[in-house]
Image (cartoon, rainbow, N blue to C red; front, side):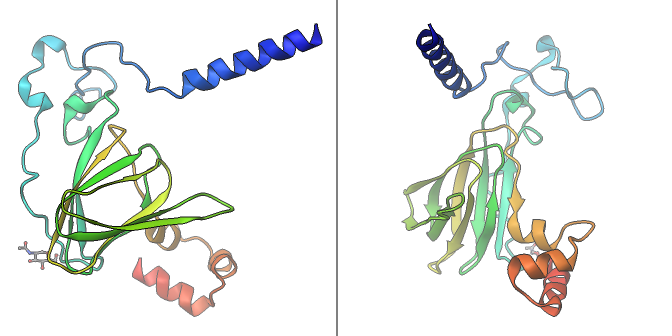
Length: 213
Ligand SMILES: *[C@@H]1O[C@H](CO)[C@@H](O)[C@H](O)[C@H]1NC(C)=O
């Protein structure tokens, strides 16, 4: 009897883990977000939805990469393309100048699949504790690389001209946590006593990093 309940319990646990491993299903064909200020949690009246609600233009335009990291991400998330709401998918264009980097960051809600349209990138991601294994590869035009959900990853242009890449993400609103900005640029600041111990740095270095972020 005890064994039977154990088997039933395991079967139940298994079915739950399988159920939770799938994408959520939508309850309607689409749920276009209302314009800001008109109740974003409510779908736009389907009769008023038009083709332009599923449309975005401009990803052919190179973004300005004149900034300290030498890169820029142009998002096409639900806030840029209202028809993406509830659909669990989005994309972004990534421009990186020679030797620029898309700095280490993670997406709390999305896996990212990236394809290079132009140039050569060194990409990498790091697994969770305790292994912190670093997977890295050089990818070129036509190559595809995937960054699993929630893992820290980066891209670096290794110099052969400008990089253009398209990243598809498994969320309409993937979110991004850029490690340097989050740790050294938080508002209000994380106490330097926390950061000196955590990163084994002296207070001057922490102050310097605070000023940079
Ligand atoms: C690119 O951005 C830099 C820094 O903000 C600015 O000085 C420059 O004028 C911009 N270039 C173009 C073409 O917009």
